[in-house]
Amino acid sequence: MVVAIPVNKDGTIFHNAGYAPFFALYNTSGKTKTHIKTVENPRAKQVPVECSTTADCSCPEEMLQTPQHVLTHYYLVEILHECDVVLVKFLCEHTRRIFDYVGIKTYKIPPIIHDERHAINNFILGSNNYETHL
Image (cartoon, rainbow, N blue to C red; front, side, top):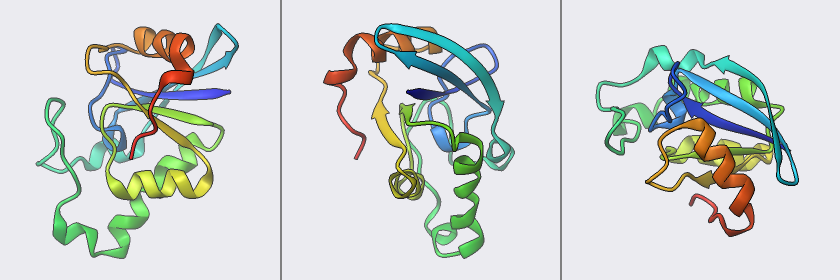
C-alpha cells in the first residue's frame, strides 16, 4: 500500500494537505515501511491568505463557485495517483471528494503527531484503528 503524508521540506506535517509544499510517499507492507520519494505539490504556490499551518481553513466561498478553482484540486490526484491512502491533519471538502472519487482513502493524523516519521509509524502500528476523514 502506498501512503502519502503532506509535509514541509523538513519533514514536519503540513496542516492543510491541499496546499502542502511536498508529499512524502511510503510503501507499506505489514509492519514495514519504505520511503519511496518526496514529491512537490504545484498547488502549494496557490495557498490562499486564509490558510495557515496552525488553523483549519477551507477554500473561500467565492472560490468554491469557480470551475477553475475546483479543477485545481485535481493536481493532487495527478501527483498522488499511485497512492492508496493520504494521511491528513486537515483536508478541504473538494479535495476529500476528489480523493474519494478516485479511490484514495484519507485518514486523520492524530493531533499529537507533528512529523512524517511518527505519522507513518503510527499509521502502520494502528492502521486498523484509524477513522476515515469525513
